[in-house]
Length: 258
Image 1: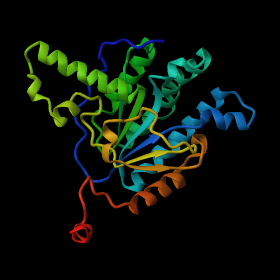
Image 2: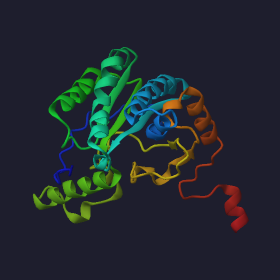
Image 3: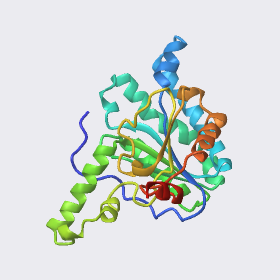
């Protein structure tokens, strides 16, 4: 199914309040292979993936994570078989029906980024209700990328700015990195500190392409339905060993180079 070319993602909620803690992004990958190894339908792999999400969200705040962004459904996933797409479309409803009350009670704000075009009206309403019911929470942000693609988001952002120029609300020379980032669906959240991909694959797969500029990357050889607190803790431990330079150099390196 083709996505509409119009950049009409839902209006983002207010910026998540600044605070200490990491922003970790996760590619939830490996559901199909998990099911295949067990001789199960892929749909059951996706349902097992929802349980992994519950475990991971529950563990995150205790690991100094303040924002968790998970990749649930990409703009490219529409090319999968119709039965699998239908199952993927049902996952947010299944997740929110079982966990929204707990998320609301425990101070978790829910935010869903990605295009709303192509989603059925019931799913759009479920997403809107989850965001509205948790909008006042500020302990932890769960950001779900659904019908999302990094390239699509960048394209939509460019189109929004171009429209502002065409309408006289902006000038071409106003475009800076910060001004462009403000047009992205992630504008009101900090850039990820760490991007984690389980399943043994080592690529971003069109996830947070702009935002990943200085993120640390950790790849883990575990399929997503088996993921849990210990795997997330190991990813954080690996992240803590990294020295983040943001394109600069530490003093010792500068002296050595001189």
